[in-house]
Each structure stands twice: as C-alpha cells, then as structure tokens.
Length: 109
Image 1 (cartoon, rainbow, N blue to C red):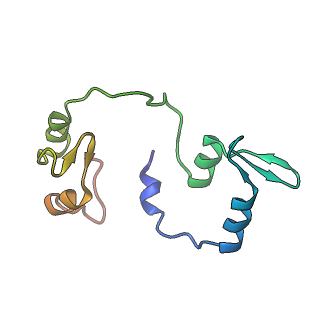
Image 2: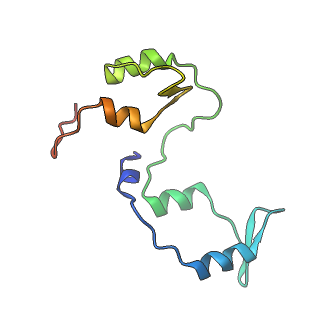
C-alpha cells in the first residue's frame, strides 16, 4: 500500500504558506489556530493527501523478527549487520549496490 510513496518526487514549497502555518501553530494543543477555528492534521488527512492505504491493524510497539533471516528470505542476501543492516533498517546504498534492477514491466514475483 506504500508503493505510491515512491512516486512522490518533489513538492513546490510555498514559503509564505509555511510561514503562516508556523505562526499559527500552538505546540501546547498540537493544533493550528486559524480564523475559522482550530485545525488538527490527522492520519486520515495524510492518507488522503498522499493516497496511502491504511486499512489494516497498526504496528505499534516492537516487532520481534530475526532481521537477517527475513532479509535472506525476501532478498536472498544478508546485509552486513551494523554496516548495512542496522536494527530493522537496510541502507539504500547497499540495496542499490546488491540488488538486480527491476525490469520496466516487472512481474508480481
């Protein structure tokens, strides 16, 4: 459901808009105070703006995976622990250097 995130490349940043929002932000309530009232940005707002699908259970708290085993199962390779595999993250440079590029029309597999 996060595939569309890869398509997001560039946003034109409107400096005036950002300045206005910063001036109206109230950290004590985590809301924007606008002339029409308070405004709160929710997860639903973010999903609608970015086109994300958030329809399953949320991952909250720790995950107990053997990350090296999972990498081997999904990638066929195990990144060096502490160098390219840091906790549950893989450095993108390592992936680029070690993965075969996808075809223009990749199969589901």
